[in-house]
Image (cartoon, rainbow, N blue to C red):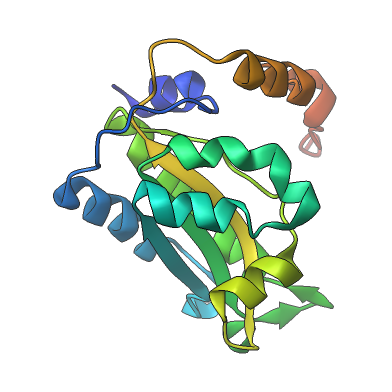
Length: 187
């Protein structure tokens, strides 16, 4: 699939087959994240890969009250938690870039997964405090996002349909609402 088709077809997946992700594909996904650009090449991203239904179920129960809405992650064979080491931050114009850098890296992983027929669902609904404690993360690490990774199931559960509808996942603003052109000066 070409890049435009890949980007246009990607969507959030909340129902997964239990089939494991082959090591070669998982490594390619992680490599895509590693190759991302970052401010001053600081590469602040750090990834935690959780494999196995039992581990993922246990983690799902340690995401805090807000994280209960993401309990569907327990059906995925793999979960990746995107963290950023704030010691690798670049601050320009009072803006911290570790969040942006890690998001770019994680998005490259999401697109690489989709290219291999794997679904994902970018998640931010979790208690960082509870999850940090559960994972025993270093003090300098922040959790930016997490996502289940796996082969999409044929049918969506009622819960997955409700979450997609609530999130408005398919809705995209038209270009005219998000782009402003500054026209060239006439000579």
